[in-house]
Amino acid sequence: MTTSLKLLANQASPLVLAGAGKMGGAMLTGWLAGGLDPKCVIVIDPDLSGDIRAMEAKGIRLNPSAAEKASTLVVALKPQMFRGAGAMLRGFASPSTLVVSIMAGATIAGIEEVCGGAVVRAMPNTPAAIGRGITVAVAAKTVSADQRATADALLRATGGVEWVDDEALMDAVTAVSGSGPAYVFLLAEELAKAGVAAGLPQHLATRLARETVSGSGELLHRSELESAVLRQNVTSPAGTTAAALNVLMGEGGLQTLMTKAVAAATARSKELAK
Image 1 (cartoon, rainbow, N blue to C red):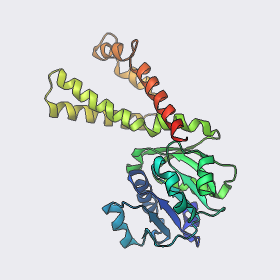
Image 2: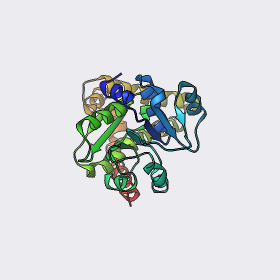
Image 3: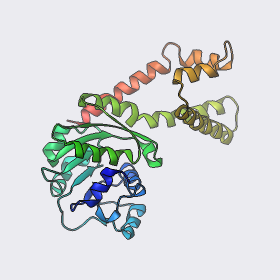
């Protein structure tokens, strides 16, 4: 267990997780795998999954009848539910509580208004479920060095963490890495459809697309080479890959579409803050 998680486990006040859906649940699994004592964790969620309910046997407290002040409050609610849950969240937060939000679009100022506490705004992504996520975080000026270390340890339980000083970057972060896994899954989906259109059986096209995307991602993860170099290494002059890339990298191709997609997601993230 990391030093920060050890300190968290030794505190008299609990860690409270508000929202135990896919992302909140993945984080909770990572904390427990990292050695955090389940008895110091409270989970608040009106619609608990069977997997989360099963964790009660390990000592996690689920939906207690009375709130108690938390050392750390992790808010993993849908942004649209956040303000409606304000009264409940304030019951767990004090001015000294570390509040870690992973909600898309929710600003530090908005979180402070609803919850109070010392706020860290973070954006993880769904590969957190297998410990391969990437999270970007920004801390309010009221967050102490110890609290930042605790937030880092909690977020790092599901993958890498990058810290930024400018909160304005978080909308673009959400568009690139927060929403990014969906773009990759869409690539696998559309590649399979293209294989079928080229004459492959559905099951074979799906297998080839899935394994190609996941294997290429693993190669990118393990390699020290830039993605552009890896692409070039696959591309023989005037070969089949070059023919395909002439389409994907041509006018109106992938770069144009990706720029538009990220811009749309960035704009939506900003709208969610209103």
